[in-house]
Length: 187
Ligand SMILES: Cc1cn([C@H]2C[C@H](O)[C@@H](COP(=O)(O)OP(=O)(O)O[C@H]3O[C@H](C)C(=O)[C@H](O)[C@H]3O)O2)c(=O)[nH]c1=O
Image (cartoon, rainbow, N blue to C red; front, side):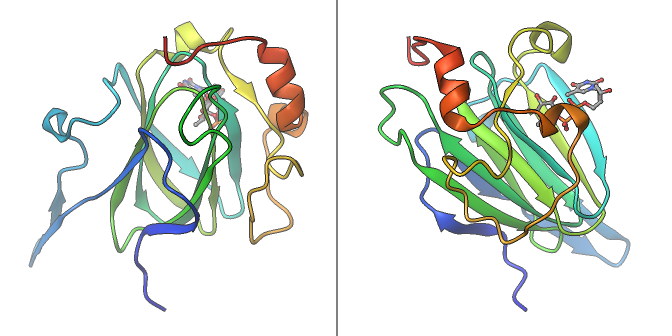
C-alpha cells in the first residue's frame, strides 16, 4: 500500500494548509524541519505539546473560537478531519479528511473556527501547537461535537473509537452551533 499523506475525502478549507515535510535521511537516521515562521502558515504558536496515543484513540472533535492550531504526526498512522463552521467562510460547511503516515511526514495548520479531530490507527506520537495557551483557552474556549454526529458528515471508516469521558458527552454539530450564538470569526 502506498503510504502517502494527504487529503483522502472532502475538499481543502480556506486558510487550512497541509505542508509536506522533507525528511533528510542518511546512514545515521534522518533530520526533518517540522515548522518554520517563513512558511507563512496561519498560526503563531505560543504553546507546543507532544501527544502519545494508543491504537483506536480519537481526540476531538474540538472547536476554538479564538485560536489557530498546528498538527504534525511523528510516528504512527492517523486520520485527521476538519470541518469549517465559520459563519460567512467561503468554505462554510466543507469538511477535509486527511490520512497521515509517519513514512511521509506532513504538517497541518488550520485557523480558529474549524471543528477538528484525529483518529489513530496505530500507537502514534504527534506534536501540536496552539496560538493561545491551554491555561487561557481551556476554561472557556474548548468546545466539542461528538465524533460521529450525523450532522457532522465525516465519512469515518471506523465504527468504534476510544474517547475521553468529556468527549463522550459532546453535543451534535447543530447543538454546538446553537450554543455558540452569533460569532464573527473574520472580524
Ligand atoms: C490540551 C491540553 C491538555 N492538557 C492535559 C489536560 C488533561 O489532563 C490531558 C488531556 O487533555 P485533553 O483530554 O483535553 O486532550 P485531547 O482530548 O487530546 O484534546 C486536546 O487536544 C485537542 C487537539 C484539542 O483541540 C483540545 O482543545 C485539547 O483539549 O492533558 C494539558 O496539560 N495541556 C494542554 O494543552
